[in-house]
Length: 130
Image (tube, rainbow, N blue to C red):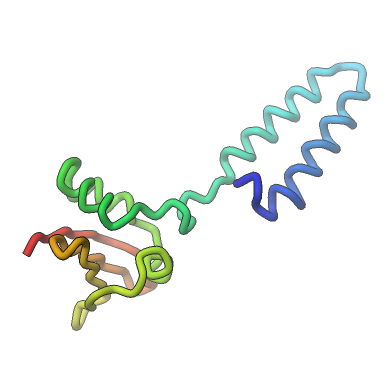
């Protein structure tokens, strides 16, 4: 959850403030503290890691592929939808024929080949240098 998100401003913040002030009026302030701990867990646990803001750049994927391996590079994109990649990286430079996949070129040197499942969700990533 982000501080400028609608769910934070409309739901989380009013609930946290109202709960805190209401529970402070009770005789035992431990209830208010426990409530804040619970709200904190919700806040940090709610964050959507598969948002467009978290998609690594094409150059970073190439760096991951070279330095940390193919599996690590693939993990960074797994779960994202093809539409999300297109919003962040732009239209692909090429498409795979007969398969669900896109090809993006980086700096005229490397090609990132992204394979999707039938729902358009990233399954596998390959980086080539040819």
